[in-house]
Length: 546
Image (cartoon, rainbow, N blue to C red; front, side):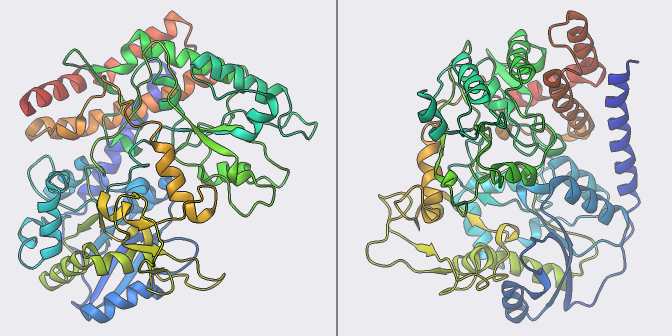
């Protein structure tokens, strides 16, 4: 066994230990009184959920005391704390999570449901939850997403039909630097190389220092999909292997993309950029906060481009105007055309809201009433946005919706500093946000003003729309059931996690992508982790779904 494969095997062993720890949770824990509901949830730095204005609305409306066990919005830390919470046996009545931080995967739902830790919601959804029922009817795929591979609704995901989120693999480039150097936006991988080389060597920020970072990124938003898609279809990896991101579809056959020569060519290209110092050393290790620190460096503008969903790594408060400098670069055209990645329906299979076996029947009813309220327009506005007249208001004459063909529905407000904080749950509110709701929101028509940020994203995303790759494997339409689903959980986690790690090792030189021996070892690692069975399971399920 090689050292590299030993690391992959160790990761799999760690997952097995975690699963074993969860198996200890099958006995029902002690519960609190029916009027006290405990909830595990991420909490932002700007407020406390226990004192939140929306928490007080819910407590008064439903005659209940909500008490929170909190974690952060950092994915790694949140995942660890959630696992500890479950394994302790002293877990809360419910979990309310954020999709892009650490929501429950389908495999986790099925396992925890079988263990009795999670309670099925099927019989709790009906006449007593009119808003959830209406949402299921309006968007049938929402109900499909909520239904786990064993046919049970163990929890609810968020439905967030976010146009700019649907195309996460974007590249934001400093247009001011392009203008300074007399360059155009790149259209091919080699043109991108030339631009990045110019950013590195020609002092576009004009400070006389070689401090420019040509291309950066962060672990929560892999740089690989944007850079690799010109060579081979590459989806964005998900936390804990929650989606089969490494799979593609070629001539009706499911293919593990990292087994293809085209994938090797793509990684070789990215590796060459890294080797030439054109990719930030931290692109595969730093979190969003670290990227933001570079984007807002007090020493001036140092980032030339970043492969992330949106340019939030630069704050509008910088006095040098850098907030307005970054524009989206359309998909590059390479040997595989100009395809891009789009992750299917607006949301991910799994769940952000679950009820545990700690919850009594009375609590279960209260929790479902609370979530049903959050799905309503009134609950959605208060839950995600805050207090009317402070954090949001109804539209006024002359206001323009994001989709200018629609009638405006509401607009957010910018309270004075120190006001209007801790008024909403934001991303943990378990809302139903369809395209009409989002696109009827009012935004400024000034794209480079903070108030026009969402419109800026909306317009930028149109550059990617219509470039969806023909090789995309529609895993969102494929359901694996029965014994295959149980088998898949471990295989998918191990294979997908290993590919993320090995990809970074190839790019950074830990593995040699140009070495046939190293390439053969990588393929053997995949085989040993069950890659062949992984593809077989999805091939059979895909055929059954047609």
